[in-house]
Image 1: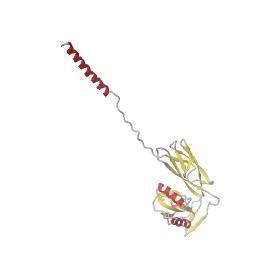
Image 2: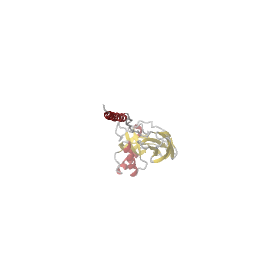
Image 3: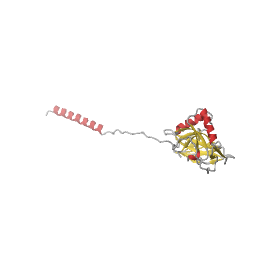
Image 4: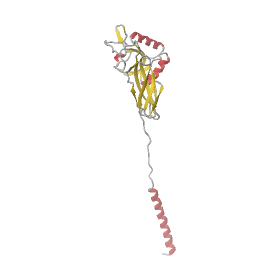
Length: 243
């Protein structure tokens, strides 16, 4: 083989070798990776630590304290901002005489709001025991004593149904409750009725209740605002158990 021929063969071999090296380098490079940033967050968990739901208090206001699972959560008590930080909150709520329902909402970016309800009884002087009767049906209006009589009531609440409602008035006699129901009808509030709280374990016993609606929680919050707009300024959302 001549010298020029040997030179050409050497050049071709070198070119082929470089091609294999380049291809090998490409296949041996870093492999692409895939990541998933999708995540789902549940609602903010909120717990009231004091006072205890169902407590009887004598003051016009109360400090509500509790914890939340989000360190950055914002907390509102009946629409008013509470001090919150590092997973704890505290806020002052005004109370009217009788039963008060405090709706507490915690919200945090990227999570659904969390809600809870606190029921407190504000006791005033002279509110510890008047008893009234109507058509032989008696309820004891008291913040300390359970009724001792067995009462059979005609209730507008659907049997075996657990739901939210809006309490328009919580009073000592059926006649008073029916008067508030009639007032609600005239104000065009839908689904009005009366019930005896003693027949529902979620309610404080001994009261006749005028209500509007058999609702979900969110519907009850909206109905509460509607009721307050038409003159029932103390109306509040409340869960009613089936029994």
